[in-house]
Amino acid sequence: MEQPAGFWVRLGANILDGIIMGIILAFLAFLIYGDVSRVGETSPLDLLSFLYGLLLPVFWRGYVIGKKLMGVRIVQKTGEDVTIINMLLRLVVGGLVYALSLGIGLIVSAFMVGMREDKRAIHDFIAGTQVVHAEEG
Image 1 (cartoon, rainbow, N blue to C red):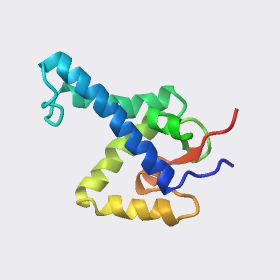
Image 2: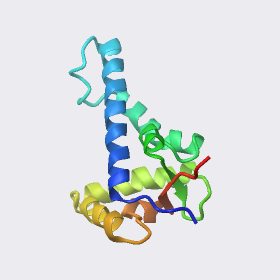
Image 3: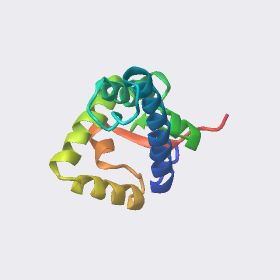
Image 4: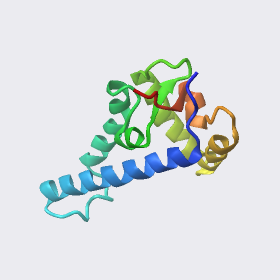
């Protein structure tokens, strides 16, 4: 059984991912639009960001760049690699739950990751996933 990743390592991975994707999207916005001020606006770059979070874990054994740097990855509850269905449930349905609860679900999830023994958040339960420390080697 792989060791579940706790709140701080998951937060660190998300912050790193936000910084990395922010830099990449700002660079692309500059190339496409001529300035970076449009990064916060709705644009085709939003699709790129969504696809990054959806597809990279499927093709890279549960990693996105931030998680890889922090030594954690997303897996199915069984320990198998995630599928496109797991990631769709995790991102889309989990995101809808957080939006419809006006962010309360996100706060509850943070407490769940910090306090539960299995460190699973609401989106992990929806998708049948967990975030674990990557195996050495």
